Image 1 (tube, each protein chain N blue to C red):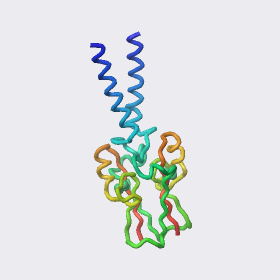
Image 2: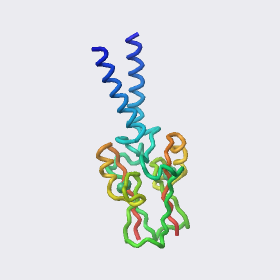
Image 3: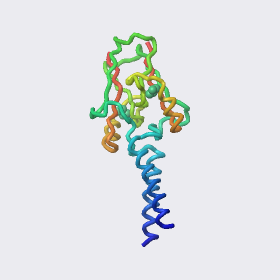
Image 4: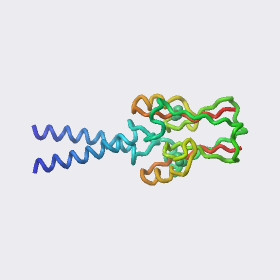
Length: 89
Length: 89
Ligand code: FES
Ligand code: FES
């Protein structure tokens, strides 16, 4: 019985580990506007003032939808490689 | 000794489960340009042709950096709420 229990635990841990390494089945937005069903932001091109503006695609910026550089922390902590979308005039 | 082992397993599984539900410590880009250290895309505003263009922020579009609607599948499968950045002329 003890051996059967250990096999079960091993299976569960393997599934958790696989899910964690591929990000399959995992939400990518931990905290932004979670009361909204879908977070869509619109940039009116005619309103752009700066020659270059970075928009967040890591869902971790404190100034979302703008990028504040937090993607660097996320990439370092997880081995990921995400970065912003740059709008250039 | 057996009881101590089970406490260890419980702790490991709790950590795995917590990581999976918050997405902390998990890469959000499963497959786009993983050979690049950081994926940054630049949109030259003067090159925009359509009155409305959607850019992907879910890292699952087959037409990245453009949105192809795949965020809907990701949201349904994971309970997430991500969506594109719209550029409007
Ligand atoms: S802070 Fe999110 S992409 Fe830069
Ligand atoms: S396909 Fe990624 S945001 Fe739409």
